[in-house]
Structure formats: C-alpha cells, structure tokens
Length: 309
Image (cartoon, rainbow, N blue to C red; front, side, top):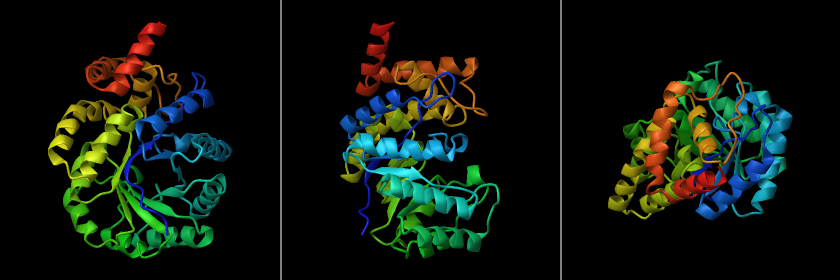
C-alpha cells in the first residue's frame, strides 16, 4: 500500500537560464536546500515547473535527474497531467520508469470533460500503468470541476492515492474528508488556505511558497499536523505577505522572480510566460525584504546574494 505523504510537498520550479534552457546545476542546489529544510516530497514538472512548455524528453530527463539527486532522501511526485488520456498514460509510464513514487494527474484541461469522462480518464491511467496517482482539481485553470462524488468513487481504487485540492472551498473540503478512506492523501493546492485545510483534516500542501521558504512551510505543516493551532496561526500570519506576492501574477512568474532575487536561479522563463513586469517588482521585492527579517531561508539567501554582489 502506498504510504500517505504528509507535510510540505514543494511544487518545484524548473530553473532555467536566461535563454530558457533547464539549469541542472541550480536544480541540484535547490534539491539540497529542500533536503535540509524538511520538505516532505518534491513535486516535479507540475504547473509551477512549467510542464506546459517543456518537451516530453525534457520532462523524462528532469524527473529522472531529480530522483537520482534525491538519493532516496525525499520521495518524488511527477507531473503526468494531459488533456489526452493516451498522453497521460505515456507520461505516467515515464514517471514510473524514472523512479517517481507517484504522479500528479490534473483534470484534463481545455476539453472540459463531464464527470463520467473524468472518472474514466483517471481509471484508464490507473489500469494501464499500475502507477499511484494523486488527482489534481483546479477548476480555475482547466475549466472543469471534479465533483466530490467523482473523487469519492475514484478513491476506491488503491492506485489512486490522493488529491491536490485547489478549489479553496473549505466547507467542501470538510465534507469530502468525511467520505474518503484513511489511506487517501489530501493536499491543499493553495498556499493561502493550507493551514485551514490541514486543521480540518488535510495531510499537507503542494506548495509554491515552499520554493522560497522551505523550512517555514515545513514547520507550518508540522505544527498543523501536531494540532498546535496557536503556533501555526502565528507562523501563517507571517507568511501571508508571501502568499500575496506569489499571486500578484500568473504562477510561476512571481516565484521565479523571487528565487532569482535570492540568487537561487536566474530569471529564465519560457514563453508564453514572461518575467515579472517592472510595475509589480517593487511590491514583490518589498515583501521579500520583509520576509528576510525573520525567515531564515530568505535571510540566509539574501545575505549570500549581497556578499556576492
């Protein structure tokens, strides 16, 4: 049986050079940061990793590279979502063969399948690959919402092991938790609602913020899992400006800008995504400076960047 992953799972960025080539040296350093920070798992080649703009060959190499550099210290979850069931099967097989422990499988985008189509899509991927998959429901991006009854039905398949819930609907999450088996992992797909989601019963988060503040996000999840509500609220309050900064433009534009400012990556990003606009940089940089006053992750990086200048 697939163990439920718990804690802060980072939605890992794919570092790129200024010409848009994947920067594997920077990626190695980022993996080491997460290993030391207590990140529970690395989620590779998802939305934050610019999966829509990397080729199938690049995705296969990226997943295998991360698995190899982890040396078993952290499990790797691989993006395997597609709007074609056939392509999703191929991506799942690639992730499985590369050594990922499970795949992140988004509701097929653009085609807007109905509930029966969604159910059959995920069931087909599970049947043809025998590879654990975490469902991903993000209606705002894909144009279709996976209903609770569909999630509950799919959760009966032992190869479907969890869900990343980016609906931000806490009442809905609470209802869903009561209907899902205990072996089924539930993860917030929205940093701003991570604490509320976990206090209601979620197992963790697949976090964009963890790219910038991995230790803080790992600590937040640990506090929530241990029921330390007051301490978790206090830490979450400090992280609220970071959540705001990450939503100032389309993901992963803001997070890549912040990581470049901290010296962890260059500012490379692939079209149709573009670097953060000048009129938004001042606000994001101010939040980053504020965060550095108390967040060790950011403070240490900022100090290194300043000394290298």
